[in-house]
Image (cartoon, rainbow, N blue to C red; front, top):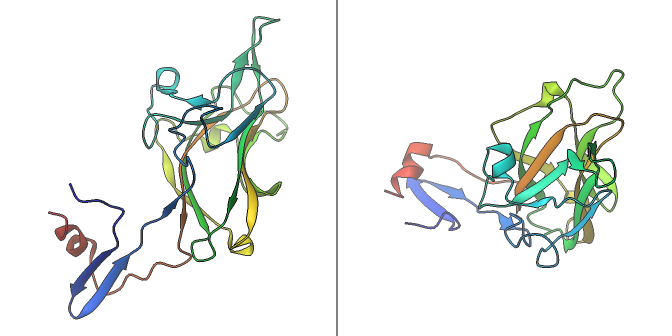
Length: 207
């Protein structure tokens, strides 16, 4: 099997087609598992574990590998014995590559209860140094279950070459909330030149 991490160069009609592979984040697919092995610092207002293999609960596997991060959702409260909505996040310190500053990731979203009326701020987010750069309201309209969505891209050029704290999370407000899982985070080039070749021609190189 040929590696998809290679730079692919095809010649078609005298023109070059170049596909650049992304730069993986440290533990960008969460395959190191939960802390302390994880490359991420985890935070939650309840004690459930949010990095792991969630296929048994969701009946949907991780997008890449076997583990991912589950943002928001519910956790069984030890005192009340009831499932309560939670706010969860993971974060890590890293340097945004100056030449590959586009953050790419995949997610799956599912809300099992009706939407809050009025909307109360349930959301998933990506943040840089505490500033949210991507959000998704956790509403029924934004359900993607059972499909993963992506790649979703967020341009972090304003932080290119800088050391930052990258955070992913889910915020739950009120008695009901939604669920979202993140997986396969990479940094991509801000522009990927591809010209003069069809996708079929590129695939032909890998037969």
